[in-house]
Length: 399
Image (cartoon, rainbow, N blue to C red; front, side):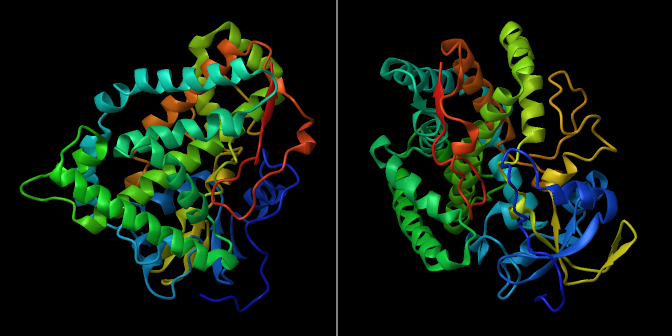
């Protein structure tokens, strides 16, 4: 669906990376289903209301797999030809989800809490030892999630830097970097292929080995599915958590009363993390793009079969019909039906791990850095652009 009419460009620009663009509130109020142009030049329907976004995320009339077809609108080149669970429709999605779900079983993920706590404490201790100020991105927000993911995959620590470099490139949606993105994907593909072959010969005790040996009635993941799952895990488990932690810390520092309440009652942490996830602008929801496979009416607007639809999660998370005081921080908000981890069959399988890392990281920062604050004026922060998950390049903090 190439652009053939006047429509605003998306993503929208914003002067405040921690808050949604002003267009979100206007769309929620006046045009909850409207057309925009994405960086590829494709025309897509932008859906903003909570109820409608839930529909698009869960209704099988909106296909994820269709975005991998040649010539289909897409924002991230990684999606092209992918066999990732992230871009599959039923019944293949159901098969893969069942196979990999055991690797992300509640008990298995919760058993990692001690290791995540140990890693976090070591990174925070190193920042404290070096002294104030320190860079939160380089000191904790980057090394913690990439190290956790690499440990889950059984990647040697000395190779973590290579993984970081490849995935930093792969999550770009800037058209000018397409060749660079595909080259990084090929490099990661080669590494993971060798890693999988080595584990088959020399079994290990890690999540990737669980996926290699996962079987249900004789079914297993093939090599292409294993590789695609590795990409998905790196993108969602590393970049999303790095950006999410940065956004969470800056948001808490903007709301000192909430920060004080959390310090006084650490038991609020799980509820606070949910509220920070709801408000976060770390991910623009760019990966949620779908293609309608039949005509569907949303909010009184007819979406034709073949049209691309982008359910805008960050707008839905501020829908005033669902969230009282949508722009505020309510650390006791319950219920909190945010859509930050998606909805329906594509609800993030690693959501529990992401929540845990945020809880542990924020808890360690507040405990070890009692005077936590930004070391520079917020206006001095330089934010990344053209990436699926926005964050400051550096985040200087003092305590």
